[in-house]
Each structure stands twice: as structure tokens, then as C-alpha cells.
Length: 498
Image (cartoon, rainbow, N blue to C red; front, side, top):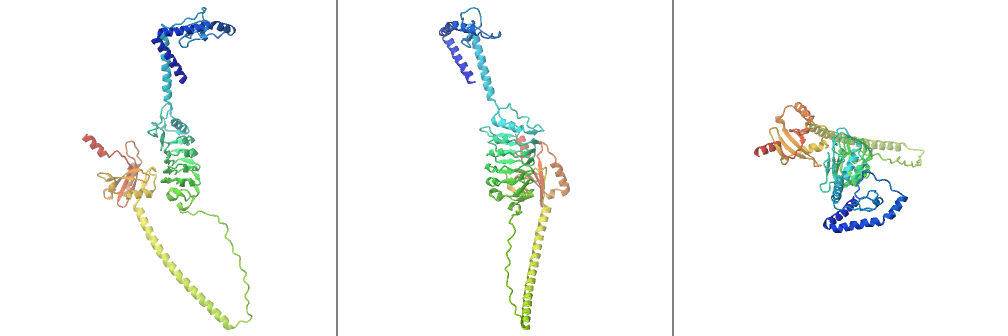
């Protein structure tokens, strides 16, 4: 392309020189024609020995001679075989046609350059490689087209504003099948990967550890197999890692402990085995992060690991010499020995009875205390109930209930005839709207719960999703998606006031 533009620029200078100094330009061209006539004889001899192939009849030739077709001032001068041997040049009438041809060539080159500038970015090509390994049964990714200049407007794709590099892949609940392509490692600026609640299988590609800017990985509720990449510790910015509800197996890499920014870890409901490393960030997570892996052991799951210590050493018996027994013992000696033995046994028996009595009393007190605690816990659990719909709340029940119980007046975002609406922020900054309904305003628990289950099963684009509800001793709480654009009341009053 550079050579094409350079050549056309050279001829543009010649044409400009022709229009500015036509007499001088004609002299230059006549000199070139004379140069052609000087070498005509030598070319005729060479052509007689090796005749050139015939030219196609459709070729446009303006100036002709039998041998001078190989020596021309292209694209200004053209030759066609004829009988006359002198070269004749056209400058005036045909110059407009030559100028028109040159303009058309420049327009064509500009079109080619503009077309080349619209080529898809490297991240876009990588996304197309990843999509080629997926089964998009719902045709969600129909707008992922190779003819686009940038993938930033594709479904589920977000980009960095300054360099248009891909920053997020957000495609949950899309019924995508297939595998996660190793090409994902080429997305070096990727920060969020959310492919949860799909039908992906295969292993987690090792190349994902090359996306060193990743901050959140959501791959739960798929059919992924294999283990966690050993170099996952390279993702130093990672704060959320959710691999729950898959078929992953093997040991939990100790490299996860090097993720100092990790705040949310969920490896539950898999087939991991072995000891959980008690190292770094792994030591900060409890049983909820590993529940559902029956072969795991360690401090975090309150299950000690088996250690092979071998057989205990057996101490050799010291052969005691038989004490010499005097052949004759007096009756007084035997009687005193019996009294001493019986007295010793009586004292030992008394001590044992006292010890057993103390143990029984302590055990009874502990049993009574434990019964009281269990009863309190049962009463609390009976009065507290948390129900979620579709598994949409990826948080432990204890965390949700703790957040619900800690709501106060600072979290109020609105109120209505049926209750007050609060904003609930989870530990990972997930936000939900919670509506508190006083028990004095609602009827029976069974009828209320049946109505909520019906509402929870309804999903519509114009309805706010009901994520679940919680029954507390003094009130009932409905959990919705949080919409940050204000309430319907504010919107309606805003329109009326406008």
C-alpha cells in the first residue's frame, strides 16, 4: 500500500508540473520519446530473436510502436504494435483522461485504507475464538460479528474507556454449553469473568492465570471438572473466587493463600480432597467456603486429618528378679500384711467413689446447660426462616440474616402503606432492597408464604425480581433487586412537577 501511494504521488507531481509549466513538461516527454527511438534498433533485434506474447485486445493503449511497448512512460504513455516505427506522444487531449484515471486510482487506494482501518481488534478476534467453543442455543451472542470494529458493544462485554480493551465478560444464566477456551489467556486486561449458571464443561484452562488483572471469577453452577490451576496465585488482584456447584476434584492449591486481597471464596459442593492449607488468606475462611466436600479435612472444616505415625513403640519388660521369700513366715507378719492391703483398697475405693460423684454432678450440670442452649437455638431457628428463590443469593444464610437484623434508620430508602424499604449492602458490595412488613399487618404465615412463592416464581422484564424472604420474630422481610434510579413515587412526582 505504501508503494502504491508513493507511485501515485510521484505522478501527481508530474501532472502538477504539466499544468504549471506545460511547455517545459512537453520538452521532457519528447526527450523521453527520443530516448526510446535511440534504443529501438536494439530492441527490434532482441524481439526478432524472442518475440513478445500478443497483448490482449481490451487493453487501453494511447501511443504505439512495434517494439516500444516495453519502454514507456507509464501511466502517461502507452504503446500498441503497428507498422510505423516512430514514437508519437499525446499530451493535450489525452491528459484529461490520464488525470481522471489517476483520480480513480487514488480514490480506490483511500477506500482500501479506510476498509483496513475498520478491522476487528485483537481482543475481538480472541472473543470470537472463545465463542467458537461454545454452544449458544438461545442465540444470545448473535451480535458478536467479525465485521465490527470493536467488541465493546457486544452482548455481555465491557471495555476500558481509554484503550477499548476488554475488561469484563458477563454472561450468566445464558444456557451456554461447551468449554472455556484457553484463548481467554490473551485477554490480558480482563478484570471480571462471570459465566455462572450455565452448562460449561471441561477443565478450567491454565491460561486463565495469565489474566493477571482479574478481580472476580464467577464459575459456579456449571459442569467443570479437573482441578484448580496451580498458578492461581498469580492473580494478585483477585477478590472474589466462586467455583461452587461443579465437579472439581483434587487438592486445594496452597497458592490461593497468596491471594492477599481475596475477600470471598466459595469452593463448596465439589469433590475436593485432602488437607486444606492453613496458610495466608486460606486461614481466614471457615466451613461455609468448603462445605459439601466430604473428603476435605483441616482446621477450617473442623475435621482433623489422619496422620501415619506408625505403630507405637513397645517398651521392653524389665525382668525383675524374684525376691527371695523366707521359707518361714510368722502368722503376725501375714495378718499385718492383710490389714494393710485391705486398708489401702478401702481408701482407694473411697477416692474413686468421690471422684465418680463429682463427675456425675458436673456431667449433669453440663447436660442441663447444653439443653438450655439447644432449646434457645431451636426457638430462634423456629422463629427465623430464610427462603430464597432460584438460588439467586450466593451468600451464606448466616450472613444474610446478620445483615437483615442489622438494618436501621440509616438504611431507609423509602416507606409506604405496607412497610418500610431498606438498602442492604453485602460484604462483597452486592446491594439489595429489603421491605419490612410488620406482623400486625399480615395474616397467617402459611398463606403469606404461599403468595410469596408464587411471586418468586414470576420473572418479567418489567417486574423487580423477588430474590427471597426472611421471617423474623417481629417482622417479615422481602428481598428484591436494588434499583439505584429512585422509587416509583419519586419518578411519578417528578413527571407531574415537570
